[in-house]
Length: 611
Image 1 (cartoon, rainbow, N blue to C red):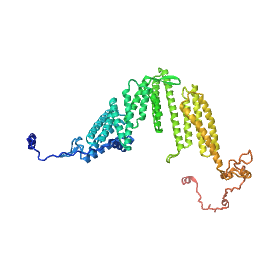
Image 2 (cartoon, one colour):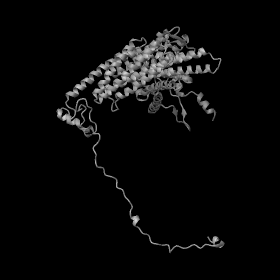
Image 3 (cartoon, rainbow, N blue to C red):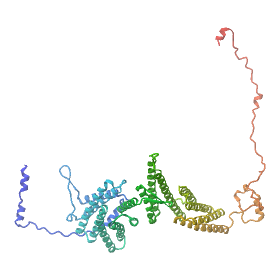
Image 4 (cartoon, rainbow, N blue to C red):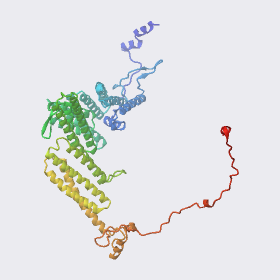
C-alpha cells in the first residue's frame, strides 16, 4: 500500500505519451474570446468610501475595519476564499490574484481594498496618543505593503481595464509610494513619485467633463502641491536652519489641508528648526537688556510661542486662531515650569547658591509672564471681536444672543490683566511702559463705559446713554494723548484706539437719532401734551398716588422737586386688636369638701413607722 503512490507518480499516462508522439487531440480546444475591458474609477471609489466610513472625522480604525469587511464580502461573492474544506478541519490555501485570474472587476476591488487597508492601518498607528514610538517600524512596513498591493492593482488595470483606469491606478500607486518615501525621508524618490502623480491627475482633470469628477482630480492636485513643496525644501536644504526656512515651512503648512502625514512631518521639522535656533542663540531681550537663557528647552518653548505669530497671521477662521493661541499658552506654560524648576534647583543649594543666576532666572520668568499677559490681551480682544460680530448678526439659530453686558465683563477682565502686567518687576521702573499701561487702562475703561451706554440705549434710557457716550468721548481723547506720549504702543493698541474713536462717533449719532425719533413718534404717556393747569394739578398729586401715570418732566412750580409721597401722611382710623378678659372666674363659687378629707393619726414611735 505504501509503494502504490510512488509507482503511480513515476508512471507516465498513455495520453501523455500519445501527445508527446504528436497524436491529435480527441477534441479541438476553441480559443477563448477576449474579455471586455473594465472601467474602474479608482479615485472616486476611494474618496467616497473614505468620506462615508470614518475619514471625514479622522477615524482611521473605522475605515480599516470597513476595508476588511468589504474584502470579505467580495471574496464570498466570488467564492475566492483562502480556506478550503477538506477531510476533518479546513485548511488555508493561498490564492493569488493575477491577470489570468482577474476575470471579474471585483478582483480589482479586492486588491484596491488591500492597499487601502494597509495604508489606513499605518495612519492609525501614526495617530496614536503617545506618537508613533515603537510603531514607527510597523508604519513603514505597512506602507510598503500598501505599495505592493497598489503596484499589483496597476498591473491588473494595465491588463484588464481601460486606459483611463490604468492611468488612475498608476497615479494611485505613485501617491502611495510617495507617502512611503516621505515617511522614510527619501526626498528625491518621494519628489519624483509625487510629481508623476500630480501630472497624471492634472491630465485627467483636463480630459474629464466639468462636474464632480473633475473637482475630485483638482482637489487631489491641490493636496499634493504642499507635499511636493516640502520635498523640494528638504532636497535643497543645506546647513543650519534660518528664519527664511521657518517661514517657508509655515507657508507649506498653511496650504496643506488634507495630508495628515505631511502635517506631522512639518511639525517635526519646525520643532527641529526651533531647537537648532535655541541652541545657537541663548538670549532674549527684555526691557532693553539681553537676558541669557541657559536651558535650551526653555528657549525652544519661547521660540515656539514667537513662531506661532506667523500662524496667527495666516489663520483664516476664528477656530484656527483659538487653536493657535492654545499652542502658544501651552508652550509658555512649559517654559514657566522649567524656569521654576531651575530656580528651585538653585535655591536647594542653600547659602552657596548663585544669586546672580537666580536673579537672571527671575528676570526671565517676568519676561515669559509678560508674554503670557500680552497674548492673553490679544486673545481676549479676539473674543470681543467675535461677540461684536454675533451682536451685529443677531442670527444664532435659536441660541441666546449675547448682550452688551457680556462685553462689559470682558473689558473688566482686560483691565485686571493690564494691572497685572503693570505690576511686573521692571515695568514700573520704565516710564515709557508706565504711560503705555495707563493709556491702555483708559482705553479699556472707555470701551467698558461705551458698552454700558449701549445697554442703556437698548432699554430706551436715552439721556443716560448720551451722558455715558460723552464720558467715553472724554476718556478717548485722554487715552489718545497718552498713547501719543509713548513709543511702546503696538499695532493692536492703535487699531483698537481707532475702533474706539469710530464707535464713539457712531453711538453718539445713534443715540441722538433715536431721541429725535422718539419725540417725533408722539407722547409716550397719556399725561404728555396736556395744558399747564393740568400739569400743575398733576404735579400737586404725589407720585405714590399716580404710579401708573408718571411723567418725568412734571415738576409743578419752578425750582421745586417733585412730590413723591404726602408727608406727614393723613390720619386714618385703624381697627384695634380686641382684648379679652376672663371675668367669670371671679364669680365662681366652689363647694366645701373638707368633710370628705381623711385626718392623719400621729403619735409615738409606732406612729412614725406607720407613715
